[in-house]
Image (cartoon, rainbow over all chains, first blue to last red; front, side):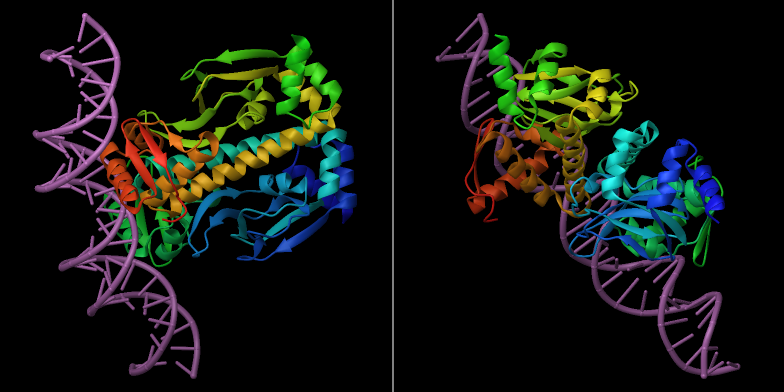
Length: 215
Length: 215
DNA sequence: GACTGGCAGTGACTATTATCACAGAGGGAG
DNA sequence: CTCCCTCTGTGATAATAGTCACTGCCAGTC
């Protein structure tokens, strides 16, 4: 079992060196997360670095009135940058993370993940690369909110969704509206327009993407 | 001269250990930057970590049509997180940084700032803290764009400005509009409203802030 | 097969922000 | 002092997005 688990991790994190993998196996816990479960909540104290082994997480921001917007998705092989940063001082999360599908996460105690920065070159690189990647994705999200109309943001959203989970988007218009911090009716109308161009087809509870580039 | 410079750096970066300060003095260059000068451009390759010794920098994002929006300000003692992340692989900047006032920046060659992560504990902590701080500020900016109307964003902007450069805001309405990615007329009208509540007083080319909290 | 609850479509209206057009005011250069 | 450029104020209008009200639809359940 240990052996297969190691191979499993290795497959998702091929850049890690052997001794690091051993350390991960020896000291971290692997947690099964159900669909819809919250992996991280705003205000929660963080004592572990979170790596994603399987499944899909969405990372988003929520305000005091329950509005939210999607920051980015995490896929197998990704790490939650926030959990790495808070790590340093047992600080509080500024974000929410929720499992979109059933998922497995690796939880590495904060003090270890910090030690490893000095101990394992591949870990250090991984952490820096994660910071950078998340920062860039966040900037992209920011761009789309700041510079684009809702129609383009919706397009951006759909494209990102296709990238992480394929051309069958199993979401209601209401859910999309929530993640874009808009309203159901507006999203419905915009989707309708997209359908008329032939880019997508609408069904109950899911959207079939044909070609988003033509729009 | 060397001695005074060292004391100067020490004053702005009191958390650095002695040997680190010596290394900084020995291997980094200090550059004078004029008001309005661009310290960093989108697409530019980054080969140094940037620390701010004096003056004020604004860090912002620009799209292909020349629209921009303010991400955050950097004050003496701060570091450009982006320059630290790109550092790792000579990567390209995703952001713009411009001197709001005359400023002095410390430029540390990338390969050194990376070595120091392992060599100096205080440097490592500083880098992690910088990442975290910028990330949080970025999230705040994101919040205000995603969840707030322009009136609240303007308020947020003015408050931030007061914090970094005092109650006399020497900006035209046009400049404010640009940084909020809005239009001059709209900003003028909103400012007028704020003036009517007594929160600010409007003058040519500058705004006198009385009390932004009452609004 | 009838009831029910969530989902989707649509028209009418409102609110916010952007754009256009223009007028007046202030301040520096000559 | 005058010219001129930039900054500011303001009304009218347009475009975008959000809200409200209502309808029909589909799927599961009893």
